[in-house]
Length: 517
Image (cartoon, rainbow, N blue to C red; front, side, top):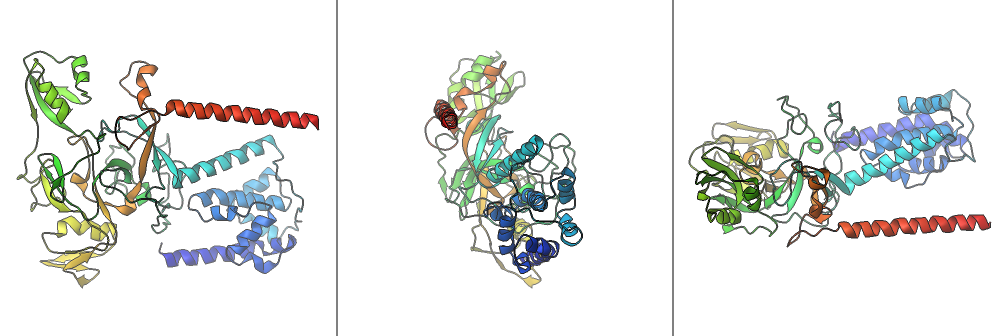
């Protein structure tokens, strides 16, 4: 839906609200016209149902408002003496239209001194659960969201089984575009696996102001631009067209930022002609062919060289190694040779972006390629179009047609194009086991989700017992920064102990005061 369409929808909702409540406003001692003025009518309604005015803000926050509307409907009918469970059910299942019945048919009376405390223990539980979900959804959507690392594309920096907190506010929280969706889940419902959202209506893209821009080589969570799978790791080959905010979430390193020229030579990234220097925590890995003297490599030997991925082919191994560990392994008396397995350019690979025979690049020898920047203009021709076709058509919503050597955008002949937003080049540190931008191209800024800031838990599926499975040294460590990660677990436990101690102290003092009275 466009902004104009949403405006008219908003006006229709205001009219419906007025028609269904104007008499109720009068019975509550207000003026009937107060029920039709947008926003003001919501403020007055909060006074009628005796709820705080800041609740009005929640009614305009996507997803949160879906949870708040049923609460408002129930609170409204209760304000006019309808306390029965059936009344609450009718208020919700009729999507608030039960107020029309109260407004025009039943002669209800406004309860001036209504108690806000639930009359039953079940009602108290339901109320607490609803507001816990609302608070959690608000934090989850706009402040901080938990994620888990399912693949090894950032191995050594982030491990499979790491549980992250991802900040939404560093780059600016992206408001939901999908208006009707189950809270606290992503693209599918747990257990049953069906879609957790409706495709329509959709809100226009909007992002709150952030505290920083994405820096080169930062680790970023984003919506996978070419996602069409039903859900993450789905192998059914059923293709689904998803809204941006319901696409699968990926985590990679932003090795190229808007305006950069990127090239990969022999597996190493060059930005604007210079070999990039990754943060010291980043450990780039490549597959190596390792030939031994005939002896098998023990698990202890593989662990010594920090090998977490590899295969034994009998007379040789394929091992995923950093350059540093590959050099160390060469000096092992069991090893005859260690060769990095790099793919040269020159043979067209349809998997490699931009998927054009004009560019016979490989994942190890690639580019140069320009990373688009908002407001920059590039020439459009048969050589440049493969890079920017998806940007023009899909990410920036233009109608593009090609007639011979002529390119038309929205029906007009075009020889150049100006980008509307920034784009990024996202890659994994695990160069030979990472599905990244080399295969599907640019990531638009409107697909950016947030910045991983904290590892709160880490679970090693290869461990034997629970104690071995938990990576204790990774608990409560930061994602970014220099030097070896430092665990803040004991700091957290100390703060938690102080908080519980303070809470117990306050409770005891309160009880003592009440006993004295």
